[in-house]
Length: 264
Image 1 (tube, helix red, strand yellow):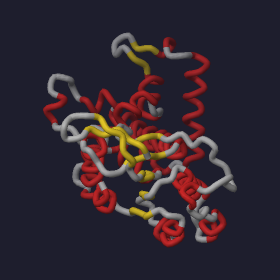
Image 2 (image 1 turned 135 degrees about the vertical axis):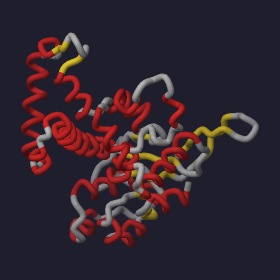
Image 3 (image 1 turned 120 degrees about the horizontal axis):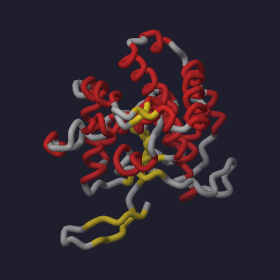
């Protein structure tokens, strides 16, 4: 990929950098660590930044994540992707964003429900049941709007708070949550492809399906190949099963934060 970089003399220069594709498992951890790359003093005088940006969900999650060694390595990835002159270009696709939205809606709803009502039973609800709850509130929002539920004391509404905890704001994602990652446009993507990028062999979806790789994960491989990525990053252990087949089409599999950092 062509990327503008700042040289030692302060001038902008365009050069080719290899691309690394982040699948959803990497994107979720990257999203969860948003804000952890900044020093505490960055938020002085601004109140509880976690509450402002993500609501009560982020406060609880970040306290837990601070003790996770892998997450700390993901924070290092964020720092380098956002602030350093790295040797690769991190990219992802809209498929990752859709899966991130699915994960965020379920996790946010369960967490918010448990915090507010102590409704532990929500943790046992499946995706379909959570989806029914979310549809009810979403339709209520569309039909009644926010004003009917507006609380004059707090200046907001329950529907708005629920939306903030479960819906990903595109502007926030670009400027904060996914900052440092390019969400690539996959123009002319089709199967079978009309032509190979860089004369690489095409990945065979049937092989990945045979090895019990899910359809969404197969799409990640195909999209990364279509974008001409040299690296494919995923924390999903299923991909290790088909590592040699990913490498056959010209991509190196990176399965841990340490491996990602090693090529940064």
